[in-house]
Length: 349
Image 1 (tube, one colour):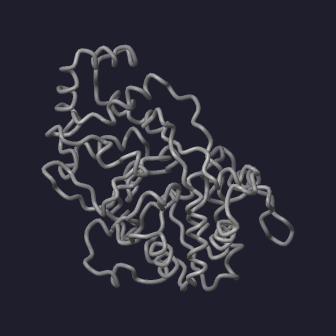
Image 2 (cartoon, one colour):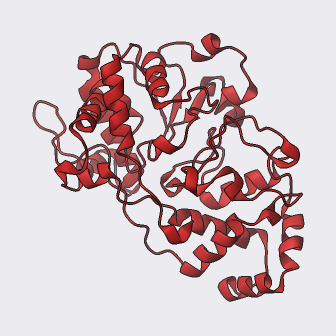
């Protein structure tokens, strides 16, 4: 889904943005065999004057994952931390997705094998089960499918499935474990499936904001409550909503201003979705990132151009919404964003 919201001022568009967020949530959450109208009716009720009632906030609390295969999760965990997936046995998935650092590596661009520097900021793997697509350009549409990308990328792990399987097969215990879990020896599909099952388990439950949504009014500060109200009012909610507070749509970076012209030094990575589709209309469109645990995942944006949340909020307001926020508004939005932080289960680390 590609979305575009043009905002002329804070007050006149807040209702439209909340309604758009509700429509996106309907697309994200409902049975796709029903009509769009029925989907929206299932999720929200609208008052006569056109306002969304308080029966459903545009952001939903995270729930503990269910129906996971515990054996696959444990196997996937071991593979996620296994350097055998890289050509020179120097990197694992966890090298760029450190769960103690918010699920990324805190760098502008990640290091690959031979100390090569990548071309784009590493997104968090935490809560990725709720993503509609994977990678900034959305070139993959499932957790299992995206596993192959870093393994084969010459700037990242620089390997291939034949090499990986050959190395893993040298470990008799590893072979035995695959047979126990999958009923067959090691192959590419099972490696990807196990890692994907582990990643499905990486959900950060119990953030202060989720507790607030679940009825604990004192779970967040008054400043965070005001920040959330501003977040909705100015239109941030049109892109950042749903369970993952984003990651369910594509958006142009620079709706209300030419971010890339003003930043300069445009790279191939800056073309975003265009690199997948080849369509001019998709230039500078990116998957909207999740804001959960955003406190932990600096620097921000695909280019790592914002080092603080305050900088990120200011840039978003300027280039996506078309106005400057006051320092007080920015501070309270950041206070709201901090309330979205929560850890994954310790046994998954």
